[in-house]
Image 1 (cartoon, rainbow, N blue to C red):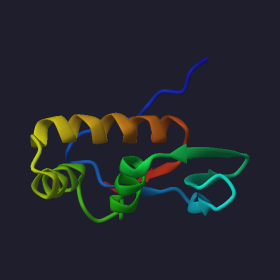
Image 2: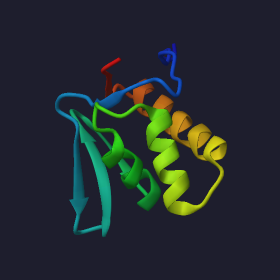
Image 3: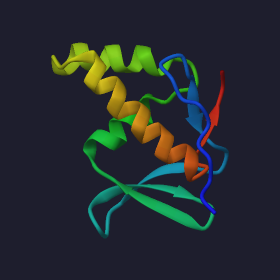
Length: 98
């Protein structure tokens, strides 16, 4: 049985769930997302997204900020962010604020 992801949209506001931490793994040389009894290795872009999930800004605002910073299409960035957030929510690594 697979976990159902909550409805995620540009108006979603999320943050890391209690007990989930972003940590650098000096042995392997990358950043990991640690949760009770599980871990997830992250690439540079995923780390940027996780750090942006501050529980205050909507996903749409984060996408707009990234689009301006990277001079990329906001719709494409928004889709990527929402897909990543969906995956983290399935893994119970996020809390929805709104």
